[in-house]
Image (cartoon, rainbow, N blue to C red):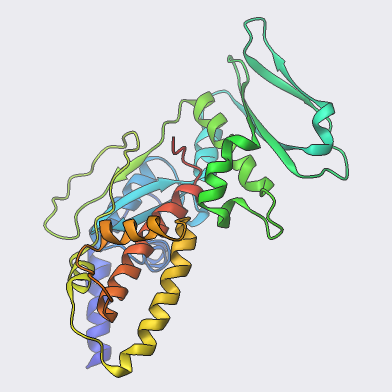
Length: 312
Protein backbone atom coordinates (compact mmCIF):
# COMPACT_ATOMS: atom_id res chain seq x y z
CA UNK A 1 0.00 0.00 0.00
CA UNK A 2 2.82 2.36 0.92
CA UNK A 3 4.59 1.61 -2.36
CA UNK A 4 1.43 2.27 -4.33
CA UNK A 5 0.97 5.57 -2.54
CA UNK A 6 4.59 6.53 -3.26
CA UNK A 7 4.16 5.68 -6.96
CA UNK A 8 0.92 7.66 -7.10
CA UNK A 9 2.62 10.66 -5.50
CA UNK A 10 5.52 10.46 -7.93
CA UNK A 11 3.15 10.21 -10.89
CA UNK A 12 1.26 13.26 -9.66
CA UNK A 13 4.49 15.22 -9.41
CA UNK A 14 5.52 14.09 -12.89
CA UNK A 15 2.22 15.34 -14.28
CA UNK A 16 2.58 18.69 -12.51
CA UNK A 17 6.16 19.33 -13.66
CA UNK A 18 6.22 21.54 -16.72
CA UNK A 19 8.44 20.84 -19.71
CA UNK A 20 10.79 23.81 -19.60
CA UNK A 21 13.43 24.57 -22.22
CA UNK A 22 15.72 21.68 -23.07
CA UNK A 23 15.30 20.00 -19.68
CA UNK A 24 13.64 16.60 -19.92
CA UNK A 25 11.33 15.13 -17.29
CA UNK A 26 14.06 12.97 -15.76
CA UNK A 27 16.38 15.97 -15.52
CA UNK A 28 13.62 18.01 -13.95
CA UNK A 29 12.89 15.30 -11.39
CA UNK A 30 16.58 15.10 -10.49
CA UNK A 31 16.76 18.89 -10.22
CA UNK A 32 13.63 18.90 -8.04
CA UNK A 33 15.23 16.45 -5.59
CA UNK A 34 18.49 18.43 -5.37
CA UNK A 35 18.31 22.14 -6.09
CA UNK A 36 14.56 22.35 -5.55
CA UNK A 37 14.05 19.94 -2.67
CA UNK A 38 12.47 22.66 -0.47
CA UNK A 39 10.15 23.94 -3.20
CA UNK A 40 6.56 23.11 -3.99
CA UNK A 41 5.91 21.97 -7.57
CA UNK A 42 4.53 25.41 -8.60
CA UNK A 43 7.53 27.13 -7.02
CA UNK A 44 9.91 24.73 -8.76
CA UNK A 45 8.22 25.30 -12.13
CA UNK A 46 8.57 29.05 -11.61
CA UNK A 47 12.23 28.69 -10.60
CA UNK A 48 13.08 26.61 -13.67
CA UNK A 49 11.09 28.94 -15.95
CA UNK A 50 13.07 31.97 -14.79
CA UNK A 51 16.40 30.12 -15.05
CA UNK A 52 15.53 29.05 -18.59
CA UNK A 53 14.45 32.59 -19.49
CA UNK A 54 17.83 33.95 -18.42
CA UNK A 55 19.72 30.98 -19.87
CA UNK A 56 21.06 29.95 -16.46
CA UNK A 57 21.71 26.34 -15.44
CA UNK A 58 20.89 25.50 -11.79
CA UNK A 59 22.95 22.30 -12.02
CA UNK A 60 26.02 24.50 -12.57
CA UNK A 61 25.07 26.63 -9.54
CA UNK A 62 24.18 29.60 -11.70
CA UNK A 63 21.08 30.24 -9.60
CA UNK A 64 19.38 28.86 -6.53
CA UNK A 65 16.10 29.32 -4.68
CA UNK A 66 15.71 30.60 -1.14
CA UNK A 67 12.47 29.75 0.68
CA UNK A 68 11.31 31.40 3.89
CA UNK A 69 7.92 32.17 5.31
CA UNK A 70 6.23 30.30 2.45
CA UNK A 71 7.80 32.58 -0.17
CA UNK A 72 10.58 31.97 -2.67
CA UNK A 73 13.36 34.21 -3.92
CA UNK A 74 15.69 33.32 -6.77
CA UNK A 75 19.32 34.35 -6.35
CA UNK A 76 21.88 34.54 -9.15
CA UNK A 77 25.34 33.45 -8.00
CA UNK A 78 28.73 34.80 -9.07
CA UNK A 79 29.00 31.91 -11.53
CA UNK A 80 25.60 32.85 -12.92
CA UNK A 81 26.54 36.50 -13.30
CA UNK A 82 29.77 35.51 -15.04
CA UNK A 83 27.79 33.27 -17.38
CA UNK A 84 25.46 36.17 -18.23
CA UNK A 85 28.48 38.39 -18.89
CA UNK A 86 30.04 35.80 -21.19
CA UNK A 87 26.86 35.76 -23.26
CA UNK A 88 26.82 39.57 -23.54
CA UNK A 89 27.79 41.28 -26.77
CA UNK A 90 31.42 42.39 -26.80
CA UNK A 91 32.53 40.26 -23.85
CA UNK A 92 36.34 40.26 -23.61
CA UNK A 93 36.87 38.71 -20.21
CA UNK A 94 36.87 39.14 -16.44
CA UNK A 95 40.07 39.17 -14.41
CA UNK A 96 40.36 39.48 -10.64
CA UNK A 97 43.27 39.24 -8.21
CA UNK A 98 44.21 40.06 -4.63
CA UNK A 99 47.03 42.38 -3.60
CA UNK A 100 49.06 41.20 -0.62
CA UNK A 101 51.24 43.04 1.89
CA UNK A 102 54.52 42.10 0.17
CA UNK A 103 53.27 43.43 -3.18
CA UNK A 104 52.11 46.92 -2.22
CA UNK A 105 55.22 48.63 -3.64
CA UNK A 106 54.61 46.85 -6.96
CA UNK A 107 50.95 47.81 -7.30
CA UNK A 108 49.41 50.89 -8.87
CA UNK A 109 46.10 51.81 -10.48
CA UNK A 110 46.16 53.09 -14.07
CA UNK A 111 43.95 56.15 -14.62
CA UNK A 112 42.52 57.59 -17.81
CA UNK A 113 42.84 61.27 -18.73
CA UNK A 114 39.47 61.76 -17.07
CA UNK A 115 40.73 60.17 -13.86
CA UNK A 116 38.79 56.91 -14.21
CA UNK A 117 40.42 53.58 -13.31
CA UNK A 118 41.10 51.65 -16.51
CA UNK A 119 43.74 49.14 -15.43
CA UNK A 120 46.32 48.15 -12.84
CA UNK A 121 50.04 47.46 -12.61
CA UNK A 122 50.63 44.54 -10.30
CA UNK A 123 53.58 42.25 -9.76
CA UNK A 124 52.76 39.29 -7.49
CA UNK A 125 55.65 37.89 -5.48
CA UNK A 126 56.30 35.13 -2.95
CA UNK A 127 55.88 35.04 -0.06
CA UNK A 128 52.82 37.18 -0.68
CA UNK A 129 51.83 37.90 2.92
CA UNK A 130 48.36 38.84 4.11
CA UNK A 131 45.67 40.06 1.72
CA UNK A 132 45.51 43.87 1.74
CA UNK A 133 43.13 44.49 -1.17
CA UNK A 134 41.61 43.10 -4.35
CA UNK A 135 40.75 44.29 -7.83
CA UNK A 136 38.78 43.11 -10.85
CA UNK A 137 38.83 44.21 -14.48
CA UNK A 138 35.83 43.58 -16.75
CA UNK A 139 36.61 44.06 -20.45
CA UNK A 140 34.06 44.73 -23.18
CA UNK A 141 34.50 45.76 -26.79
CA UNK A 142 33.63 49.39 -27.42
CA UNK A 143 33.81 50.35 -23.75
CA UNK A 144 36.60 51.33 -21.37
CA UNK A 145 37.71 48.65 -18.95
CA UNK A 146 35.57 48.61 -15.83
CA UNK A 147 37.91 48.38 -12.83
CA UNK A 148 36.93 47.78 -9.23
CA UNK A 149 39.59 48.12 -6.51
CA UNK A 150 38.89 47.66 -2.82
CA UNK A 151 41.02 47.91 0.29
CA UNK A 152 40.56 45.11 2.81
CA UNK A 153 39.16 47.64 5.30
CA UNK A 154 36.15 48.13 3.02
CA UNK A 155 34.99 44.55 3.56
CA UNK A 156 35.73 44.25 7.27
CA UNK A 157 32.04 44.62 8.11
CA UNK A 158 31.21 41.54 6.03
CA UNK A 159 34.17 39.65 7.45
CA UNK A 160 32.94 40.43 10.96
CA UNK A 161 29.36 39.41 10.20
CA UNK A 162 30.15 36.20 8.33
CA UNK A 163 33.62 34.84 8.87
CA UNK A 164 32.47 31.45 7.57
CA UNK A 165 32.74 32.72 4.00
CA UNK A 166 35.31 35.47 4.39
CA UNK A 167 38.01 33.86 6.53
CA UNK A 168 40.48 31.05 6.00
CA UNK A 169 41.26 28.56 8.77
CA UNK A 170 44.13 30.77 9.97
CA UNK A 171 41.83 33.79 10.28
CA UNK A 172 43.17 35.65 7.22
CA UNK A 173 40.88 36.95 4.48
CA UNK A 174 39.94 34.29 1.94
CA UNK A 175 41.43 35.45 -1.41
CA UNK A 176 38.84 33.58 -3.48
CA UNK A 177 35.93 35.21 -1.67
CA UNK A 178 37.48 38.68 -2.02
CA UNK A 179 38.13 38.14 -5.75
CA UNK A 180 34.53 37.03 -6.29
CA UNK A 181 33.29 40.11 -4.43
CA UNK A 182 35.17 42.62 -6.61
CA UNK A 183 34.49 40.47 -9.67
CA UNK A 184 30.77 40.66 -9.02
CA UNK A 185 30.88 44.45 -8.86
CA UNK A 186 32.93 44.68 -12.05
CA UNK A 187 30.55 42.36 -13.94
CA UNK A 188 27.48 44.29 -12.86
CA UNK A 189 29.07 47.61 -13.76
CA UNK A 190 30.47 46.65 -17.17
CA UNK A 191 27.58 44.54 -18.41
CA UNK A 192 24.71 46.51 -16.83
CA UNK A 193 23.51 43.52 -14.83
CA UNK A 194 21.42 44.62 -11.87
CA UNK A 195 20.92 42.72 -8.63
CA UNK A 196 18.10 40.32 -9.42
CA UNK A 197 15.62 38.60 -7.20
CA UNK A 198 12.39 36.94 -8.25
CA UNK A 199 9.63 37.15 -5.68
CA UNK A 200 8.10 33.69 -5.61
CA UNK A 201 4.60 32.47 -4.98
CA UNK A 202 3.02 32.00 -1.60
CA UNK A 203 3.00 28.44 -0.29
CA UNK A 204 -0.71 28.18 -1.14
CA UNK A 205 -3.47 30.11 -2.81
CA UNK A 206 -1.24 31.93 -5.31
CA UNK A 207 -1.98 32.38 -9.00
CA UNK A 208 0.20 30.95 -11.76
CA UNK A 209 1.34 34.38 -12.96
CA UNK A 210 5.09 34.76 -13.39
CA UNK A 211 6.63 37.92 -11.89
CA UNK A 212 9.40 39.75 -13.71
CA UNK A 213 12.93 40.17 -12.49
CA UNK A 214 13.36 43.40 -10.54
CA UNK A 215 16.02 45.12 -8.45
CA UNK A 216 16.67 43.41 -5.14
CA UNK A 217 14.61 44.52 -2.19
CA UNK A 218 15.54 43.84 1.41
CA UNK A 219 12.69 42.16 3.25
CA UNK A 220 12.05 40.98 6.77
CA UNK A 221 12.02 37.23 7.14
CA UNK A 222 8.59 36.03 8.24
CA UNK A 223 8.42 32.68 10.05
CA UNK A 224 5.80 30.17 8.97
CA UNK A 225 2.82 29.32 11.15
CA UNK A 226 4.42 26.22 12.66
CA UNK A 227 7.35 28.27 13.93
CA UNK A 228 4.98 30.87 15.37
CA UNK A 229 2.95 28.17 17.12
CA UNK A 230 6.08 26.65 18.66
CA UNK A 231 7.22 30.04 19.93
CA UNK A 232 3.87 30.52 21.66
CA UNK A 233 3.90 27.22 23.54
CA UNK A 234 4.63 27.85 27.21
CA UNK A 235 3.95 24.58 29.01
CA UNK A 236 6.49 23.53 31.63
CA UNK A 237 9.13 21.08 30.37
CA UNK A 238 9.00 17.46 31.43
CA UNK A 239 12.04 15.91 33.10
CA UNK A 240 12.90 13.98 29.94
CA UNK A 241 12.99 17.27 28.01
CA UNK A 242 15.67 18.89 30.20
CA UNK A 243 18.60 17.38 28.31
CA UNK A 244 17.05 18.39 25.02
CA UNK A 245 16.59 21.94 26.34
CA UNK A 246 20.27 22.13 27.29
CA UNK A 247 21.24 20.88 23.82
CA UNK A 248 18.92 23.43 22.20
CA UNK A 249 20.46 26.25 24.25
CA UNK A 250 23.95 25.16 23.20
CA UNK A 251 22.82 25.10 19.58
CA UNK A 252 21.29 28.57 19.99
CA UNK A 253 24.67 29.95 21.13
CA UNK A 254 26.31 28.49 18.01
CA UNK A 255 23.69 30.06 15.78
CA UNK A 256 24.15 33.45 17.44
CA UNK A 257 27.84 33.16 16.59
CA UNK A 258 26.98 32.24 12.99
CA UNK A 259 24.79 35.34 12.78
CA UNK A 260 27.57 37.49 14.21
CA UNK A 261 25.40 38.63 17.14
CA UNK A 262 27.61 39.39 20.18
CA UNK A 263 26.86 38.22 23.71
CA UNK A 264 24.69 40.25 26.03
CA UNK A 265 22.14 42.88 25.08
CA UNK A 266 22.23 42.21 21.33
CA UNK A 267 21.15 38.58 21.79
CA UNK A 268 18.43 39.57 24.24
CA UNK A 269 17.11 42.12 21.77
CA UNK A 270 17.13 39.51 18.98
CA UNK A 271 14.98 37.16 21.08
CA UNK A 272 12.63 39.95 22.16
CA UNK A 273 12.16 41.04 18.55
CA UNK A 274 11.73 37.61 16.99
CA UNK A 275 10.22 35.52 19.81
CA UNK A 276 8.10 37.85 21.89
CA UNK A 277 6.14 34.97 23.44
CA UNK A 278 9.22 33.71 25.27
CA UNK A 279 8.99 35.05 28.80
CA UNK A 280 11.51 33.89 31.37
CA UNK A 281 12.78 30.33 30.97
CA UNK A 282 11.86 29.05 27.47
CA UNK A 283 10.21 25.68 26.88
CA UNK A 284 11.58 23.10 24.45
CA UNK A 285 8.98 23.88 21.73
CA UNK A 286 9.78 27.58 22.06
CA UNK A 287 13.50 26.90 21.72
CA UNK A 288 12.96 24.68 18.70
CA UNK A 289 10.82 27.35 17.08
CA UNK A 290 13.50 29.96 17.76
CA UNK A 291 16.21 27.70 16.34
CA UNK A 292 14.20 27.19 13.15
CA UNK A 293 13.76 30.94 12.82
CA UNK A 294 17.49 31.46 13.33
CA UNK A 295 18.15 28.90 10.60
CA UNK A 296 16.04 30.99 8.24
CA UNK A 297 18.08 34.07 9.07
CA UNK A 298 21.34 32.15 8.66
CA UNK A 299 20.21 30.79 5.28
CA UNK A 300 19.45 34.29 4.07
CA UNK A 301 22.74 35.66 5.40
CA UNK A 302 24.80 32.83 3.94
CA UNK A 303 23.09 33.15 0.58
CA UNK A 304 23.79 36.85 0.42
CA UNK A 305 27.49 36.27 0.94
CA UNK A 306 27.68 33.18 -1.22
CA UNK A 307 26.40 34.96 -4.29
CA UNK A 308 28.25 38.19 -3.46
CA UNK A 309 25.20 40.43 -3.60
CA UNK A 310 26.13 43.98 -2.62
CA UNK A 311 24.50 44.62 0.73
CA UNK A 312 25.00 48.36 1.10
